[in-house]
Image 1 (cartoon, rainbow, N blue to C red):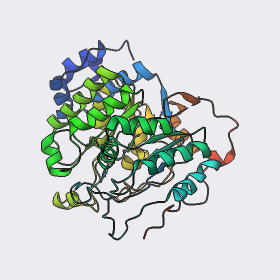
Image 2: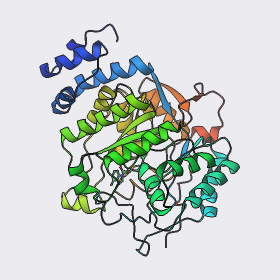
Image 3: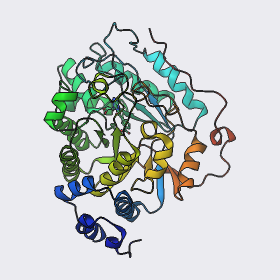
Length: 399
Ligand code: V47
């Protein structure tokens, strides 16, 4: 593909300049980003992004055997993050907070699975202190020494700093000491202050989110980054957001993967306001956001598709649109399912292999740091390869 004339690959003439730059490996500008968002030449856009991806990653597609854990849905931002369906007030119906023993019991599922990563995010609980999280991380490390821990978004780190009267850097240091491997990319939403005033009024600002990630990178804690798209943001807001991520990456090199997060409008105030309940983003938008992420974020090594949000079906298509990283086995998660995602709770290891191979790509199981764990898959236990008859049950008893 590298030798191909990329201009011939796009049918929209407004993309010729971008195609030329992509062919020559040149950085795209904010205006280029806007042209990409404006185009309806999805296939042309996809070819450009596929070229940029294959140049970096060849035909390899990464996935992880991971388990999501959401220890609490109690969140002090319950009434101001209008896009969120997960958060509850402490005494509200459906509120839950797991004890450490309950978290450890949930994590026991990892014993019979090839799990390499616990992905831990939750609400901003007013009373759960730093020690709850450091003990959780230490306890998980002791019980599952081979499993990396990707935990706590920048928003949760800033919240802990506030309730501990400490700095975010000291919180990061304490978590790192306890055994934290990396930070997930949530909480970024869209950095524009106008958008934040509408959808996430009291959440930390874009600058603060970037500062926490900068600090993590300085401590050698790699992190992920995200953008929540498909609500009130404009193409300009999206491009600005992506370029802010790119410029932090120029500075630190600490981002591992970028994940565009598709807004789900069910059971939240924003969805009702926008009269969007029951209608999540379109496949066209989802593929566009993957491809544009790959093209604008020329310094972030991986682009991840989050199948629980966009479906495994669309995640497979994303592999031809610039994506080289597929969300893992997951096991059980609430944030998107509470917001109306209709996908299953988990994909089996063998199902992920089939998804990637079905797109003509070569699966590579990775750990949290993108070190390859396995790229040949003969002689794996039969229980990993086929979906079990059991459905995933809710690990939390909600009061
Ligand atoms: O910040 C909340 C999003 C994020 C909704 O790093 C919603 O690998 C859609 O951190 N519709 C938290 N999205 C999740 C998170 C994450 C997710 C996937 C991968 C990684 C990673 C991290 O979930 C929040 C917010 O952007 N979210 N509500 C909703 N209604």
